[in-house]
Length: 95
Image (tube, rainbow, N blue to C red; front, side):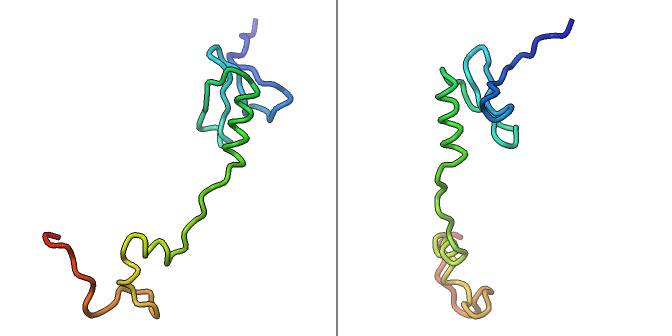
């Protein structure tokens, strides 16, 4: 006699992405390595999954913006992209 599966899916949803467990509904990341939940209803799990999958991501920084943000932008030679020769910005004492 085959065992009943421990999790069930709603066929109307993406196969295997939302599962029902004893504590509520959980949804799985697209790679299947992370599980999120529990949610009281299937609709809440679906809304959370949709928000995560289609949510707006923060805009990425360009290389120059990232270098400026961490404080090394002015240390690089703009022509070569290499560390500038000669005097560099002062280092805090003790470093």
